Image (cartoon, rainbow, N blue to C red; front, side, top):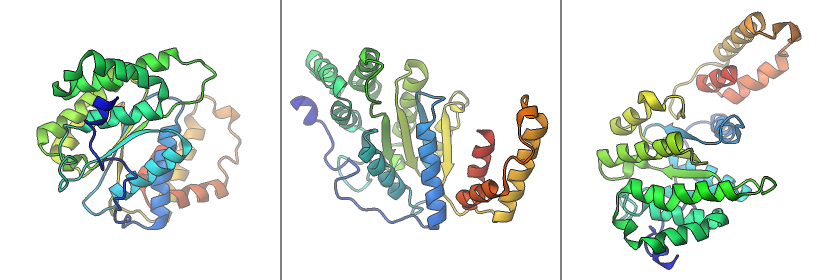
Length: 284
């Protein structure tokens, strides 16, 4: 573990003093975004997944990522965080990414500590290997074995990894590579993690997240100035709820008064003008 600790990037954690400008969006929209992220994280239909939070510079992505990290850390569900910074040596490259995440996971998921230590002891040159090798050796394999050994009655483990500012990591190919290997681990290895990535929508990152084989796994959330009036959101919700009542296989069991006007009003308020929130509710 001493060898591993010497490989981490100091200052990459969410709680090491860096402060970010608050989001430029209104408070109601901010609360809606945080609510959507929490809904994604607590969804029981999946045991892993990725969420890409993107938007222009200065939109407040890092502040949101930091807030989510703090909230999840308080709830005991934050596994690790890494905040890239293009102007800070060690935080603008991928070289210490996997070691930093593995170190935090060894603390947040105690069952992995022995397994990670054994992996480093068996091959201390792992840090000179590819990023994918480091991911599998230090993170994926220990997590899979640790979760397999857990008793059903055990407390729900920390499972969220936050990676902020991926566009501030040097090299377009590296950015693309990071998205690919993380998603591959989720798809093929079924590593039990939720991974939140925030960045600007730079072409390498955008193209990676939009690739065909990732569409079912990736949730996207845009932070921009796109805004619909509450009346438009309300009309959309009523139209879709009426369609559900007319076409759902169990429509005969749906009460005529469902949903209530009060509930639709609450949904409109939570949407905060963001169409993606309303469409997510309808899909659910």
